[in-house]
Image 1 (tube, rainbow, N blue to C red):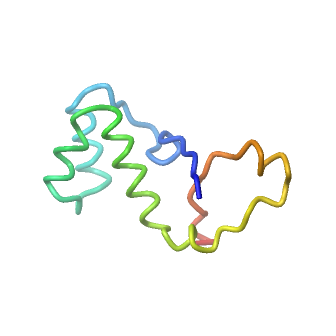
Image 2 (cartoon, helix red, strand yellow):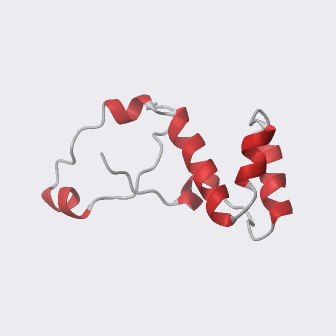
Length: 90
């Protein structure tokens, strides 16, 4: 399975241009994240995006096991950006 993601869909609005801004976001939204992981995640925009994406995907990991192929032939060819299931359908 290949999953295309758009990290901004997973993080919501965040100014991630500085280490301090990334650290504040993680402190507020991911308070149980280990200090070692948080320290790695704030090193760059890409590391931050990767961390937020992994956390979002991990919260709904079961949905990847039950994901069926897209019924639409164009979607099967072109793909789509993955979004976590809504809380009601998770």
